[in-house]
Length: 193
Image (cartoon, rainbow, N blue to C red; front, side, top):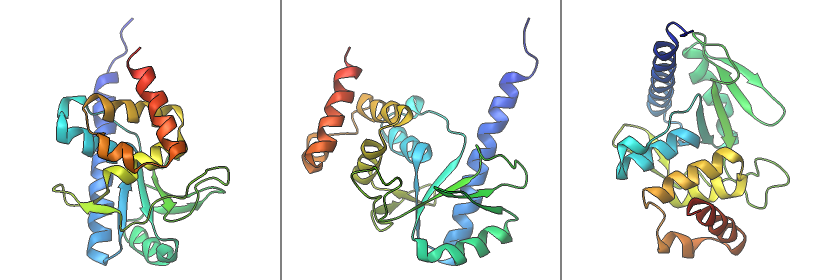
């Protein structure tokens, strides 16, 4: 039995994520708050440079920010009517149009370990470039380091996507610390099987 409207609902959800990304980054740009788009949206930006058809969707917006900017960010987000939720491991802003923890705006502290068990801290926000789309996005090498540090299932999928479109070259590989290079080689081995 077909589910009515399921594809339309999916398309609308993806449009809301893009609208949220553009709305929040534009407001942060206007306020002069430095950030970098990370996570699935950042991977999509880099993959699209090689092959737009190879991009994946994501359900949320992840931003790398300086922890000292939280008050300014909170003020900007309040102006957009986003509600602050301070969870144990991360700060989340809920969109008033879609108040779900799964689809909000997640903040990651620059220069800090996301989890105590991580071997490497998150990059600095200065390791970003201003994309043609009008927002700051984490540089590819820094994004790859973040994905290799986290190394969750979704991170391995994102790394495989970047490898498939040949965005990870020898220069990037050579810049990685040995522990992260070993993880990348594992993803490369799985991608060819």
